Image 1 (cartoon, rainbow, N blue to C red):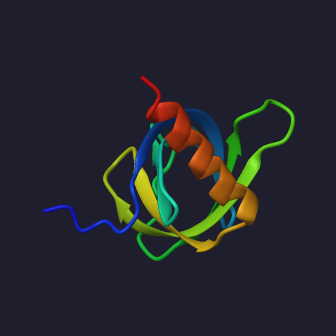
Image 2: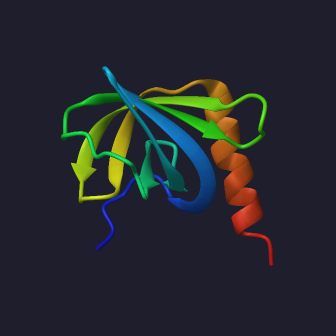
Image 3: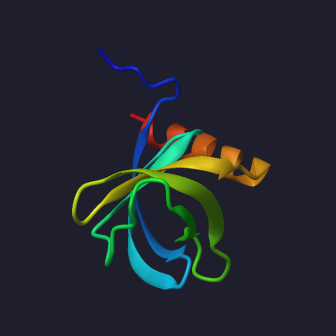
Length: 102
């Protein structure tokens, strides 16, 4: 049984991660209205850690996602958003539209 409230969409966007004094990089591998997963992460913050992800959809202006780590499994981690800019909601809708195209 899937307990998720929001549909999750697979993505492949380069991203930078900031957690306190630590910084790293990875790939935003999935996205929903409530959270995201960073795969291939250069470090894995502990659950409960506040993080900022800078996602490069376009090379010039990254989207900023702010959340709390809810799961970490070695080289990937999942976050639950704690702040959600309306532009990010539109991004999720755009990703959903592209994924659902035949």
